Length: 110
Length: 114
Image (cartoon, rainbow over the protein chains, first blue to last red):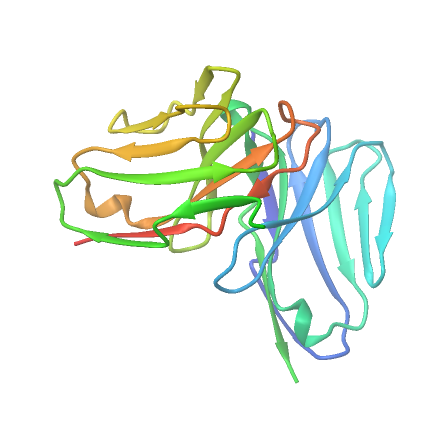
């Protein structure tokens, strides 16, 4: 099935620094979704990107979908301790479900 | 009100046993899913179920079988449990079929096979 590669696997930042996670696919994606999972929690939907070159913002979070619809990024400005968690990108996958990237674990040092 | 609920939250059992995990959604969604998250946090789709049609990820062993008594429930039955089945299992639901609908996840069931 389709694979979605996500980097980095871990990211340590000082509180207040910016954070970016990147997602790449070898094939064109019809859309891409982003989820956040807090430690001990479950994935929670953040956003969906559908259009080529699309940029969406949610407060300090900026999501981009590449022009070729093969890559995407999530950027967090001025991280806060509440941003801790694992961020997953996800594209269309097997069994009509989602194919998740391996996630980026964001660790914030106060 | 909890949108997607799962029971039990924790399940500890011996190898070879058969167990079930229940999932219910009160969102009125048409499609439900089961995902497996391993110890490295990798999330993998196992099944999706929509309007009595079951779609199976071919990598899932046939010891795993979902059963849907009605549109709001999709239970997961696991036969002859193995050590490698230890993981967190998430149920999810969406309105209509993917790929254009967000998925709502349940709180997860942590299965430990001894």
